[in-house]
Amino acid sequence: MPEAELGFGDVVDLRPVPVDDDGNLFISLVINDWAVVTQRGIDTVVDLEGGLDVGVPAAPNERLYLYFPIFDEVLPNLDNSTALPRCARRLSAAATGCCLIAAWD
Image (cartoon, rainbow, N blue to C red; front, side, top):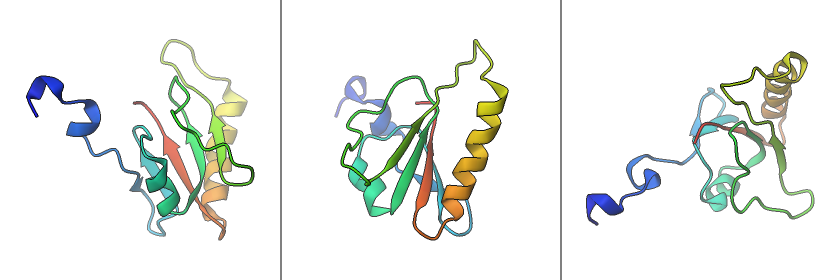
C-alpha cells in the first residue's frame, strides 16, 4: 500500500492495551473494531474524546458507554471529572467485567 494511502490505524496499533496488573483496565486511542472490545471482555467504555465512536453496540444490557468529552479549550466540571475516574476504577475492579478508557483519537 503506498504511504499516501495509509491511515492512522494502519500505522498505530489501535487495540486496547491493559494498564493494570489484573487486565481489567484498558486504554485505547479509538475503537474501530468492537469485536476486539467484546473478545477482551470489556463491558464498560469511557469515551473522553470529542466524537462518539462509530458503531457503538446498542443492544440492551451489553455494554455501558459513558461519553464525557474533554477539550483543551475549556476545563471540565470538577465534580464530574473527578467522579468519572472513581467510577471507572470501581467498575474495572468488579468481578463482572473490564473498563476501557477511550481517549484522544
